[in-house]
Amino acid sequence: MRVIDSHTGGEPTRLILTGGPDLGTGPLAERAAQLATSHADFCAAVLAEPRGHDAMVGALLLPPEDPACVAAVIYFNPAGPLGMCGHATIGLLVSLYHLGRIGLGQHKIETPVGVILAELTSPNRGVVQNVASYRHSKDVHIDVPGQGRVTGDVAWGGNWFFLTADCPAPLLPAQVGRLTGAALAIRAALDRAGVTGAQGARIDHVEFCGAAMSPQADGRNFVLCPGGAYDRSPCGTGSSAKLACLAADDLLAPDTPWVQESVIGSCYTMRYHLDGAGQVIPTIAGEAYVTAEACLVFAAQDPYRSGIPV
Ligand code: PYC
Image (cartoon, rainbow, N blue to C red; front, side, top):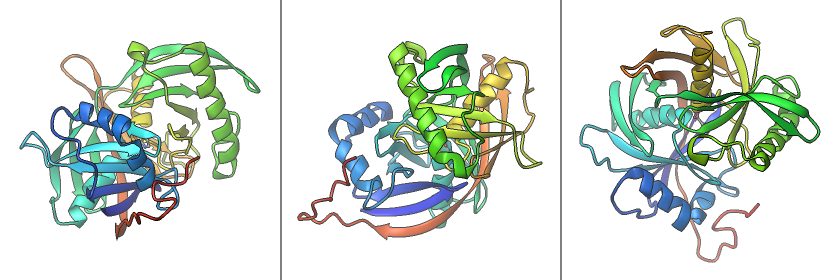
C-alpha cells in the first residue's frame, strides 16, 4: 500500500495512493458507509499502532466521478470515516502537488459531504472552502460527572461539534491529558442525555474554546476527535463550527479574518461569506508539509497486521 504522510499545523494525514479496499462506484457517502461497515479493519490497520497512531487521519484517494474534480477522497480515522476534514484537505493538496499531480491554483475535490473548492496558494499553503456550517442549538446545558453543569452550543462544520467555553484547564499542551479526559466525559454525557446534531446525528467532536495566547490570534481551542485523540491543528471543521456560532451571535462579520489557534499554538486563518441562501460558508487557510513517502507492508503472519486493538 503506497502512502504519503503530511502534517497540517501538526495534525498528521496519511494519504492512501494505492492498495486501498475496492469500494465500487456510486455516491461517495455510500462508499464511505461501506468503508465503515465492511472494512473497519482497514482503518485501524493503516492508522493505528504499530504503523500509525491514534491522532492520524487517513485520506483514501479515489478517482473522481465528476471530471471537473482533481480527486475524490474519503477521510477516516482509526475509529472509522469522517464526513469532512479541513486539515487533511490541506494535506491532500500539498501531497498531490509534491507528487506533481496538481499545480498551484484552484481545484475541486469530491468528498462524502459534497464537492469542495480548494486552492493551493503556494507549495505548502492551502485554502479550503468548507461546506455550509451552522449552529444547531445554543446554550445546551449538560451535567457532567466531575465537572458539574457544562454549557455549550451544538454546531455543524462538516462534522458535529459540542463547543464550550467551560474549559476544565488552560488550553496548553501540558494539560492535554486533563482536557482529553474532560472532553471524553462531556461526549459520554451528551450521549446519555440524548443530545444530538440534526436528524439524531451523534456529536463525536468536543471543542473547548478559550482566549488566544499569541497576539496575532483571535481564539484558541482544544478539539477531541472521534477516536479519542486530540487535534494538533485548530481543526478545520471545528473552526468552521466556531465561525458559524460567531456569525449566529453577530460577533463576526462576513469576510473578516479570524485566526484560530490550536492547543499546540498552530494557526488557521478563517473567514466566511454568506451564500445566496444566507448560509455560512467558511474558508480555512493553513500550512502543510510532507513528512514521508512510504510503502506499508502487511505480512500474513504478523499478529498485529490489523493494528493493535484498543
Ligand atoms: O481538520 O476538520 C479537521 C479535522 C477533523 C478531525 C481532525 N481534523
